[in-house]
Every structure is written in structure tokens, then in C-alpha cells.
Amino acid sequence: MQTCSERSESIPLVDLKKQYFSIKDEIDLAVKRVLESGHFILGNEVLSLEREVAEYIGVKHAIGVASGTDALHLSLLACGIGEGDEVITTPFSFIATAEAISYCGAKPVFVDIDINSYNIDPAKIEGKVTKKTKAIIPVHMYGHAAEMDEILEIAKRYNLKVIEDCAQAFGTEYKSKKIGGIGDIGAFSFFPSKNLGAYGDGGIVVTDDKDVADKIMILRVHGSKQRYIHQVIGYNSRLDEIQAAILRVKLKKIDEWNEMRRKNASIYNKLLNKLPVQLSKEAGKSHIYHVYTIQIKRRDECMKFLSENGISTAIHYPVPISDQEPYKYLGYSEPDLPNSYKVASEVISLPMFPELKREEIEKVCEAIKRFINM
Ligand SMILES: *Cc1c(COP(=O)(O)O)cnc(C)c1O
Image (cartoon, rainbow, N blue to C red):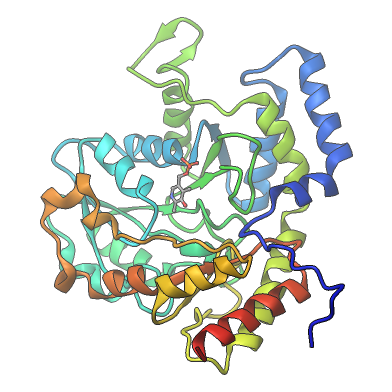
């Protein structure tokens, strides 16, 4: 029974302020340290973060860049991918995954997803490999590890590079190994709302391949190794010192935060289990729940109902990349990618962040139950 004193406070999809206030002193000190150093681009903070991330993931090299999109783009360039090449990826992702391929002049080739994991279906990859295929970009969607063993096997058979899109999955493990260090290259985003987020844009590339690392180090700073001596046309794609200093504070907490996400997801799973909704199926311990997503009928109505009840939700993502305006020229339609089209019309992402409270999750699930019984 509701009491008069019960206030109906709204529940956000993500709450970045709560996290900031929980680590405010350390963050403020880190920012101050950079401001007082007078060194803002490619200094000690970026170098230290690169070492710490490489160690965390378990790879030899990490190179800070300006965004997750750039991390993907520079990775593809470092693999020599360009005009006339094809890169296999998933249509059920943020558009940046495909954009990075297009920036190189290459063509994205979309392979449908598995309906339960939301990740690229390895069984459908081989049929799309041609003489032009140079790489596969699996996306660890929502923070859930893609089926890397099968993907690596196909890549080996056809001599393809594997670039993991890890933008939603910092700290996710696949068979006890950190993702990003499983394929040839891992590309991470530090966009503020990602599970490891900066206070602005940022990204990082991780790899064991020294040649790739060297190329990315050069590409991110105008194609130059030695100041004012340029070997190739490069980019301005650096991670800021301030962001790196902030990320070094947050990196120490990421395992704890991911664990809190997992705990929240298990509460959701338990409360939603009996309802006619499709929960995401996690294989082993391979999900950090950057986003907590379910499939539900009458999705758009549900979203409206939850919003009227003070609960923020989102759709990641409402349109498959293959159906977005710039990619329509490739000519895909629903029968080519049935699972991607189906989930695009049925997924809804519920509030998820480490500091989300049990009572809030209960409130969300109660509202979903009321909606279903309406
Ligand atoms: C966020 C995201 C990107 C792009 O990262 P930015 O840092 O915003 O450039 C790429 N791929 C996926 C799957 C993402 O979620």
C-alpha cells in the first residue's frame, strides 16, 4: 500500500552525478594536479593510464586516442584496411562501428546477430567472407562478450584481423580473459556514459602487436613520430591529460562498479523472470551490464508508460545500422538480417548504473508488471 509520505522520485537511466560525488575528492585532486602541471597533451597522465590499462587488460600496448570511434578507425588503418576492402560486422550496434569502416573507404558487410546474446552470430560469418574481406569487428554489445573462440577460428582460417569493439564492455571477461586482449586489437570508448567513462570524449586502443601500436601512436599525432617531421597523413586524435588523470582514478574502481552492475542485473532477472519478457542470456560470467536490456511486446507503449511513471528508459538501438540513411545503399532488408530487425523493434534498456538501489529496481519491475497486465 502506498503511504502519503512516499514521494515518487524519478529513476534515471544513468546517473553520472552520483558516481562523481562518491569519488569527488580524488577526482578533484587529479584534475588540479594536471591544471597545476601546465601539461595538457600527451604527458605523464596519458602515459601512466596507457600502462595501467595495458596491465589491466593483459596486453603489451595501450594507446590513448580522442574517442572510441577514432580507436576503431585508427585500428583499421593500422591493419592496412582501405578502398575496396570489406569488413564484417554487426548491424545491431551504435553507428560508429560501421562509420569507422567507411572512413577507411572500406565496405561494411553486415552479419545478423544471435537473438539471445545480441552479438554477431558466428555461424553466419563464414558465408559472408569473400576475397575482399580483411577483418571482422565483433561488438561486445551491452557489455556482453561476443563468441570470440568461433570468431577467432574463422579469422584464422581466412587470415582476417579481429578488431574488438569494446566500447560498452570495459572489464568484461570471456572465459576468464579480459576482452580487448582476445582479438588482434581492442578499441575502447571513454564517452561519459560508458561503464568506464571520462568527463568528455576519449578512447584507447589495446594490442599485443607492436607494429600496430607504433602505427597508431603515429596516426594519432599527425603522422609524426618526431615533432614536426611527418611520415604519413595522420590525425589529431589524442586523449587529454585531464581525462587520463580522471580515468586513472576511475580505473581503480571499475571492477567494483562492474560487480555492482552485475548484482543489479541479477535483481532485475529475478524480478522479471516470471513475466512475458525476454531477458538477455549470459553465457558464463561474461557480462558487465553496461546496459540492461530486455525484449518486450508493445515496446513503444511500454516506454511511454514507464516514462509517465517517472522511469527513464532508452532504446539501444531502434534502427539497425543497415537501415540507417547512409547505409541504405548497401541494399539490406529485413529478410537478410531478421534477428537484428526484430530486436530493434522490441528492445528496451532499463535504468542501470552501479549506484542504482534495490528499491528502485523493484519499482521499475513493478511498473513493467502493471504495464503487462494492463
Ligand atoms: C559508444 C560506442 C562507440 C563510439 O565511441 P565514442 O567514444 O562515442 O566515439 C563505438 N561503438 C560502440 C558499440 C559504442 O557503444
